[in-house]
Length: 305
Image (cartoon, rainbow, N blue to C red; front, side, top):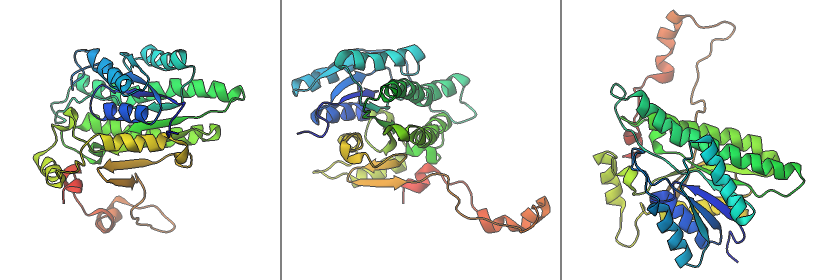
């Protein structure tokens, strides 16, 4: 028996890259899949239904079941229609993979309001809309006394570590990570899990990374094994979506090739304390270098060693 036999999944942004790999992996392991993709360019412009259709055809050719969706995840009613499509098509919804994304990269002094809103809209609002409508359905099941099999897998990025030219994208992905932790707590009592992955894969959206980071990835690639193949993220998503991962929730995992990292966020790394009274600005002049005497560290500096 396959890991996901009898399950129904939605994968957003499933026409290319990581989302495509996730949809194919879920189907390969037995899930029926709504393949959602607007078919837009990297910057969110245009539309091409053929991309979602091709993934559906690939799943069908391999003996699986899938249906295409061309809705916009950041649209309130459109995202609701995606959820409704899964339920109307197969009578249930068990797994939500939020992967849809775009890039509007500009250094902060050149970034427009439209660039900001577009990135936040797809990545953060889209994740919210899809999660909200999905969880609302599961909550109705739970209130009716029905068993709920709920898995939410969100997508964040190493860009939130600080990548020049991606303030909008980094803010959205950092928001997705925090959103994941909060939703995990909120849905825990219904038996639903909510996790996020931080995948590293060769896709059209990663073609714009810095030369240093690309050189590191190229050096790591072997003839027999490509750590940047999106299939690796897909297999990890299958695991998180399975019964075997029921015990995991509220976590963010970095996935690169044969390596999975459990990552952490904004935890206290050090402290200064003055017992009995608050600090004055003058006292902080002397005390703060003991706590934080360092310059900002970019994503590239953290990932390229």
